[in-house]
Image (cartoon, rainbow, N blue to C red; front, side):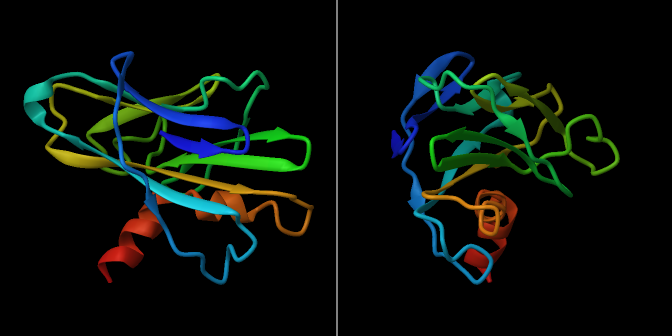
Length: 157
């Protein structure tokens, strides 16, 4: 479990909660004001067949705001002066265009990947970041901070 100011982050596979170990990630010039930035990984094996891999804030009662970008699907939640963003490397509805062998969707309290019978072995990643307090000039930082493909790229560089 990862504790954010808006409650715990939990990961579910086919509606069963799984244990995970969040990786604290470094801040860089595009997200210096973040209070937390983490990478969550789930190792998928083709033998598992179809799975829904969800990262969420199960205790959140507010509706999230979708903030997507190129190969990034993200959802943000606001309360008082806090913003928490959960991101996934995906392009919902454009999977074929980007050669993804999986899809996904937004859920009321987070985001999820959905594998298919043709999904290859791979590591699915979620980025989680938050900022407190956020202001108009820095609230974009959570979206950048929750982009797992950038964290993965920087880690392996």
